[in-house]
Length: 212
Length: 281
Image (cartoon, rainbow over all chains, first blue to last red; front, side, top):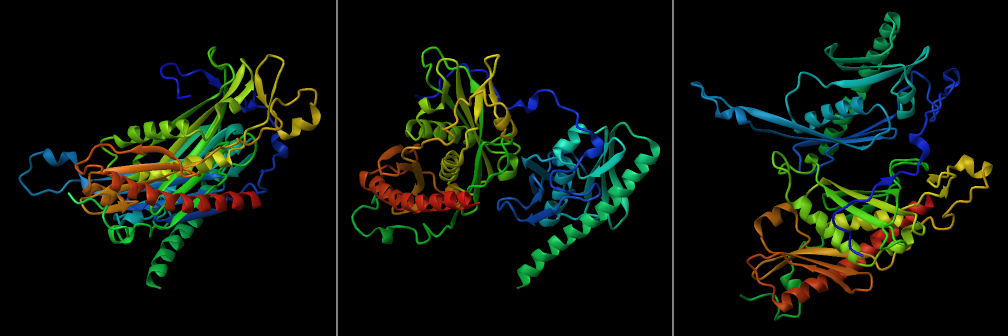
């Protein structure tokens, strides 16, 4: 029977996950994939995921899967403005799609976007890497999965340019004490520099493959 | 206007690299576990065109006229990552393909919606099929249909039971051992029984040539497109020719159908391989 036009019937999901969230004893928390609290998920990064884009990248960190494509430089609407010197106004469009959300989505999208921009050949000051940390009671968990994020008391996300040692973005929310924030930032910056190295080697591999 | 009809040798009229595209289909389980992102999913890649199909099952109350039937809602999305043409203007072709897919899948008889019934008159499955185009490089309908068919082949219907409030609830693995008094409503039916699977081939027509499986560049210069959908027993499911300056002479259309038959064989092999790979895991 063809789909009925007009009313879409109300539906509900049979899964009980939307009901009350039982509070697990934080002290006994063990990450489902047996990671230590200060261990990030293994990162799989590839450029050139989308053939129609100027540059693109695919990132898979555990269950979080993201594709980012970059189009540009393209002509900008600001080209209409009068100027008595010649001017070329360009826009670069960056689009991201989260294929599967497994926790810590925004940091993964940001790191993937950095690779996509590099793949498109856009001039950058540096690659940028992003990592987030969740505060679960007394413990800090780096690169949390969605379950850990839903139980957290606070979260902190840092985006930084590892080679220049500059932080470009810092988002903090929830409950934090000053010493905890310091520890969390140290953790993030350490992880960002390691992630920066992984991203560089991913880009280098593409070039060495081309040379062969 | 000499259509490609007189010579019986198709290869002289066919573009040389008509079938040179490598067809890769993966049926991948994107989320593991019973309470997961998708109940059935598949990634299909034909040449560079990439489609991701995902099915989410929800429970609905069937209508009064058809108390034994579930429903399928099909939607095709083209997010801006897939092509530079999608922004600033959203792609008009997305809604056309969405309707085309919906009509083809529902009329092909692949799925008997009576199978989606859980409790007659009270509860039935609503399957939301969403297809995302990740890379738009021509012949979007073919890849989208292939990914939809693969997603339905992979679909695992969650085991549910009726709880005391009369609501359908998911039965998760740990409760299966404990609460055996709540009998699962659909313990046996975990996979959909699929009848003839539809496969399609898009061709573009020129005065003298038929170009099968065009890329985006090829589609942009030719305006006459024909899509033939056949099922696994080579019966015609749908023929779609939306205008265009080249008229559809019978012989031209027959050649397209013949090309589509070759394609159906290829795609069936690819799909079977992908399903058996998944079952090994």
